[in-house]
Image (cartoon, rainbow, N blue to C red; front, side, top):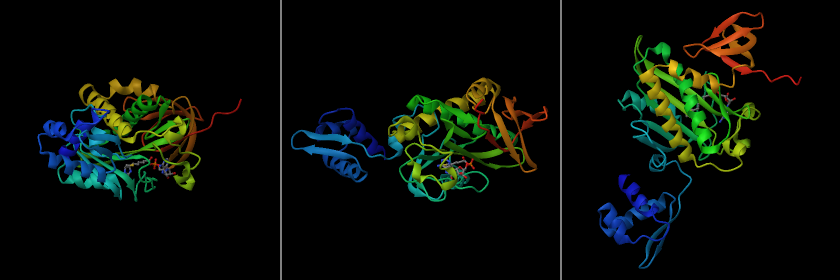
Length: 328
Ligand code: BT5
């Protein structure tokens, strides 16, 4: 992997031809070895032109979220330093849980081009067509109590919002507690799962799905109206490796801020970026359904809703749908 990365770097730094000699000097391997790595890269989908006496030229990169492609857009200390890549997988969250149990370090990321058993919350499924989205799971080992684990969904949603804004200039916002919306439709969903004892979190698995280039007809029937892709909203195909690299970079920044300075320091940014606030909502809980206006985020990230009877209620875990604004 490292060798591929280095050969690619040597190739990619020039827009013209690079001689086999130069590449072999840059990576410290023989020209025969370089030629073998070029063949490997071609098998990965890189188009590399070779011309006698001039050398090699990188013509195009494949639309793949290879770890070394993500790494080009990463600016982190620990998140994404190890990335496990899969073409197809059941669910990156399931794989991450397994890898975490086997002792993976904090910041290890699992990515897949496609998931055949992508999961949402409460047993729902998540459409994850091949090569069209960013389906990833990050292993975190925060020193927090299990009670605080839900905060990680909100913090991650903020990172996704920031990455989308950076990469697309679209106006993304958080739908409390685990979605990211563009134009009022879901572009990203977050699924946090935890391996914990009574008072300590052993590992958190943070699953982030982002609809980068998912065609509208690939969404399931029940999500056709509510889901959208960044590509549809932005009117162009997105570089998924860049989107993921920037998401992980923002994720590390907000996570470190939370761990070092406390959750309070993120509250204002969360409030500013939460589309749910100020809106009429329906809250669907195990005990029943009710309506109200979402007015604030509490200190711990819970949603504060003034219900239709005027009572202030704090919502910790529920389905919250935003009621459409009335026409008047
Ligand atoms: C979520 O669940 O929004 C969390 C989704 C997390 C997906 C990531 S991908 C990487 C990692 N590995 C996994 O297996 N999962 C995570 P929830 O709030 O329950 O939303 C699920 C509902 O959204 C479904 O019932 C559909 O109605 C709708 N839906 C399904 N696929 C969608 C998609 N690609 N985009 C938007 N909406 C979708």
